[in-house]
Length: 192
Image 1 (tube, helix red, strand yellow):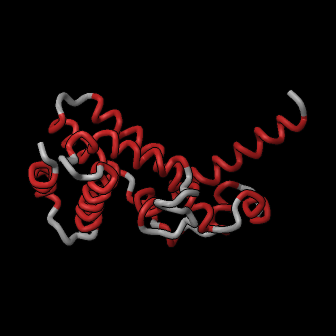
Image 2 (cartoon, rainbow, N blue to C red):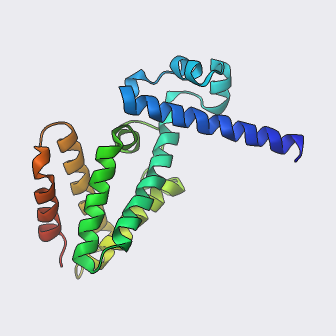
C-alpha cells in the first residue's frame, strides 16, 4: 500500500468517525447538541481537522442525510421484497418508512427537516437521495392507477407518509392509531 493510499484510507476513516459521532450525538441529544467543538472533543481531533473534512455543521447534516437515505432505501426494499402482492408490498413499504422515521429521528430530520445543503428533485440530486425515491417508486408505480404518472403518485404517497411521520413525532397524532392510519392510507390512496 502506498503512502497516498494509506492517507486516503485514514481520511475516509476520520470522515466516517465524524459522521457516526454526529449521528450518535444527534440521536441522543438532538441536533442542537451537535457542534463542531463538541464533535472535535468526542472524536479527539482538533476543530481544524474536522473542518478539513466538512466546512461546518450543514455539511455534516448532509452527510448524515445521505447515509440515512441509503439505509432507508435498503429497509424499504427489504420490507417490500418479503411481501406478496401489491397491497402487501405497499403496506410493507409504508410500515418500513414510518418505522425508520420513528427509530432514527435525528437521521429523519437530517433527511427532511434540516438544511444539509442537498439538492432534492433536481438534476444534481445526490445518488442516495435518488435511490431512496426509487425504492418508493419501484413499489408504488404498480398501484398508481391508469392515467396517473407513477412519479407524481409516488410523490403524493410519500408526502402522506412524511406527514404521518412528522405529525406523530410532534405529538399531533396519537401513536396508537399509526397502524390504522397506515391501513387507511393504503386503502384510500393506493388503487389496489
